[in-house]
Image (cartoon, rainbow, N blue to C red; front, side):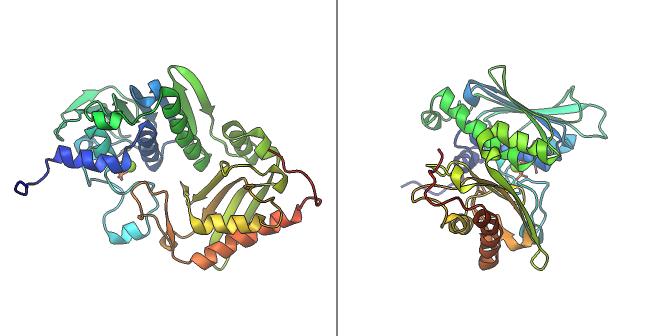
Length: 345
Ligand code: ADP
Ligand code: MG
C-alpha cells in the first residue's frame, strides 16, 4: 500500500462521472434537463454516431454569464440551490452541480452561451483536462449550445461498454421521449446523422398533447386511453394524464410513464397503486399502460435519493398511494370490459 494522497480534480471528476455518465443517453438527459431548468422554449439536438462522436444541443434559455462559464464546468457549482432549505423544496431538475464537470472530464466539451443583457456570446472549451477553461468570444444568439464530442475518448474502459450505434441511439431517443413528454410546452427537434427523427412543436391544447404522445409512444395507446384529471383540495395533490383501457394491456411494462413535478420517476409505491387499480380487470401477466403526471408540494417529496434522480421518496406514502389508486381505479373500473374479452397486444 502507498501513502494517502488527494485525487487530482480530473481524476475525482472521472470517478464521479461513473455515477452519472454511463453512455450518450445519460449525457443527453443531463444537458436537456439543464436547458429545461434554464427556461428554454425550444431545444434542438444533433447527434452523430449514436452520440459517441457528437452530441450538440442548442437552446433558447436564459444563458450563462461570461464570468460564470468556467464555473458551470466545475464540480459542486450550481446556480440552482444555495442552502439546505432550497434543497428540501427544490423545483429544478438539477441541483448537484456535477453533470457538466463529469461530462467534460470524459469528452471534448464546448459550452457557448449568451444571456439577454450581453452584447455577444462567450465560449469555454475543455478536453478532459483539469478544469482550466479559457473564456473566448463567440457569436451566439440568446441561449446556450453544449457540444460534447468523442465521449470516453480518454477512458477506454468505459468506451468498451458502449453498444452499437443503433442501441446507443435507442437509449438516447428514449431519454428525449421522456423529457418531451414531461414538458408539452417546449419544442424539441432530434436529428441523427443529419436526419430528422422527431420534430415536436410546443403542444398546448389537449389535442396537441395527445398528438405528441401518439407520435412518441403509439397512436393505439392514445386511441385506447382515458383522460384523468383530479385534484385533492386538502392535500394539494393533483393527478392528470392518460390511462389505457384494460383491453389495451401490454405483455411488458414498457408503456408506463409517471412524472412527479415534471420529473420522470420509478417508484414502488406508485407502481403498486396502479397495479392495484388494474388488478381486477387485467389478465395475469399483463401490464397496464399509462402516461401520468402528479403534482404536489415539492416539500412532500425528496428527490435527492440517487444521482440520476429516478428515485424519489414521498413524505406521505400512504396518502400518495391512496390518491393514485382511487383516482385511476375510478376511471378504470367504469370501463371494465365484458368478462372473457381477449386482451389486445
Ligand atoms: P446543475 O444542473 O446540478 O446545477 P450542471 O453541472 O448540470 O449542474 O450545470 C452547472 C450550471 O451550469 C447550472 O447550475 C446552470 O447555472 C448552468 N447551466 C448548464 N447548462 C445550462 C443551460 N443550457 N442554460 C443555462 N445555464 C446552464
Ligand atoms: Mg444539470
